[in-house]
Image (cartoon, rainbow, N blue to C red; front, side, top):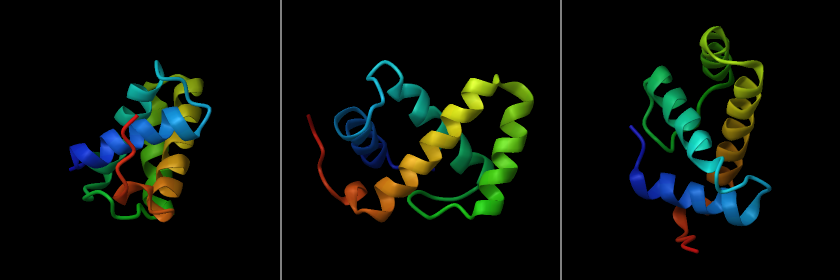
Length: 93
């Protein structure tokens, strides 16, 4: 389960520190949440690469190619967000 504060901080990170448009941010949050649910992990634990690939493979069965690429990007940015310590900061706009 994802912590709402971490998700909100990630949303703020996406909009302020990356090229992700505010209108797209909710989808990035949805893909992260879906992956953690699929992998049955608690946030902000690191998702092992094998589990990410399994998630993306399953995700691709029901989503368009551009959505799979967006989900991959969301996972990459979330990993950076966690590793860089942004998840522990208050990134309110």
